[in-house]
Length: 183
Image (cartoon, rainbow, N blue to C red):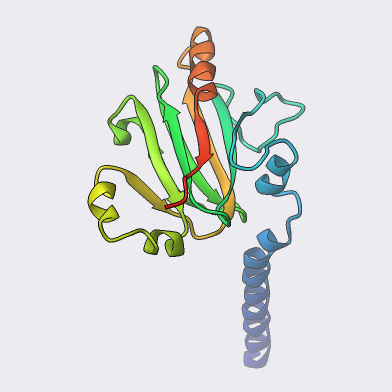
């Protein structure tokens, strides 16, 4: 009897390990992740408005129809980028993702405390190359370090009621995602 219990426990343990490894490895095998889907519709380092989601088709999964959305597909191999996003009347958020769909930074209009969200995005190596006196000037600006050279910036603006959707879309259409000038 004890032998059967040992075999059952060993089987459950082995099954749990295989399950755990499979769950962790599966996202790396996805070919149609968000980055791949956006690559088909968005050029590098520019903001593109996403179409409103509908039940039949949505560019990204789990999009909320109460939000207008735009995306910037970035590539930091040539240098950093500057993101400027005016805030909408209700709520605006900016979320940064690696090319493997891992969110690593987010900010909203309330945290920015201004009429626009402005920040620089660069790799740790690019930030380390900033001149020493740049740190004094950088104290007033937000610098976000990206763990990968490519990825997505997703901008969302809330339309608290259907009549506010044009204002949310207008706020996102004024957003800019441009290459930083070489230092």
